[in-house]
Image (cartoon, rainbow, N blue to C red; front, side):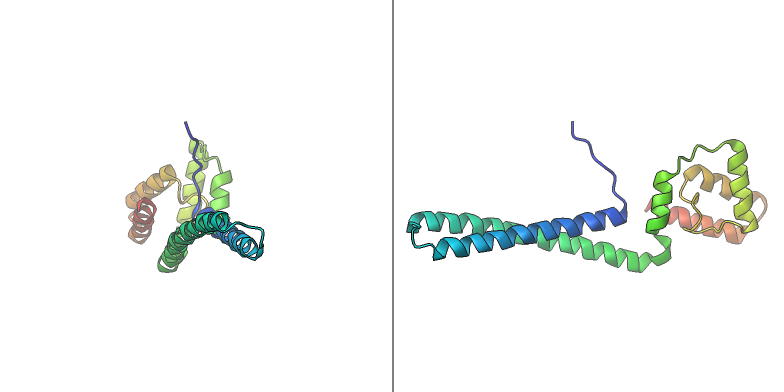
Length: 163
């Protein structure tokens, strides 16, 4: 069974860039090989034709793949422009990766209190904001304390996270 790694948006963008670069390097090597094979007068016409056909076909395939990869890359960049500060920053994604989120009830209550007091904002700069238990309990407290503006912010965040 294959193992898969979950990538953050930033890791995916980096992966796409590296793959396009790798494909471009292969295309360049193939082009150079075709040029050298053509300039080598010892090559038989038939073997040159086969080599040229195979390398041309590989280049066409890699070019098509790069076109798709760049389209995906541009789409992700456009998405980041549309959602701006609602997307996680690299810094917060790193925090989330390294955070274990094994809250004790006391810790959870402390983070909720800090958020309600304004010490931790209700946005992506809050390192706990993408933890579902934290959000659910924070929303419950905001509703109980009739903090409707904060409830709206939390619901907006939850809808962005789910989509």
